[in-house]
Length: 253
Image 1 (cartoon, one colour):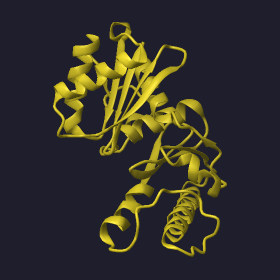
Image 2 (cartoon, helix red, strand yellow):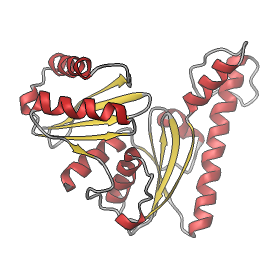
Image 3 (tube, helix red, strand yellow):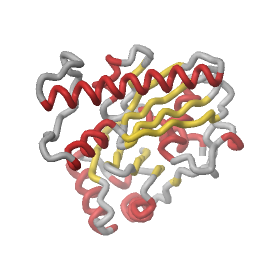
Image 4 (spheres, helix red, strand yellow):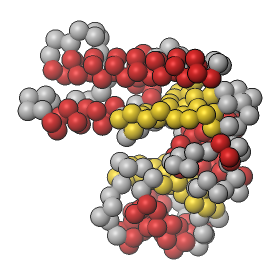
């Protein structure tokens, strides 16, 4: 079995693949104050409650944008599975044109773009990831990384409003019935959901104008299913896209 870990700034997504399908996946909080031993207990507990056996894991791959947590998960993969994990970096095989990969490209974006090109070879593709940050990465049909646009994520924007204003409430993001909010909650939903939908649509349009090609648009990330109805250009919502990218990189290496 394959163990994958996608370490983000807000959450760590962990999953197990049996070679055919994803058996389990979990989301835990990214806590840089936790010790390596504490993460070991978490991993061991997740496996135990799922009825999985750590000794059945024979491969592991880790993507991380939080360097302080990379070593903890790497160490625990060896400790729990007796497997040295593949650490996602620009030095591994990705199926992309290596010379086109920007030096500062995050490993999560690398997974997203590699998987997008693998699924749609010969097709210029954009993957829109609604995470802690909103990222819009594009790859051409030959596997050249064209570039990425990054903005604060939807929840990040809501938290900024909540944390920096005295009277605005914390809001669960849903598509509002109207763009004309009549109370604080509906007004925030209208501004965030329709505002971000318009931003994504504008970046797609601007990207296509720059490259001279129509893009295939895939969405992933926690709020992708919620907001995709407001963005007609999104052709597919793929919740497991980043994890599928991690599996792809494991297979390629």
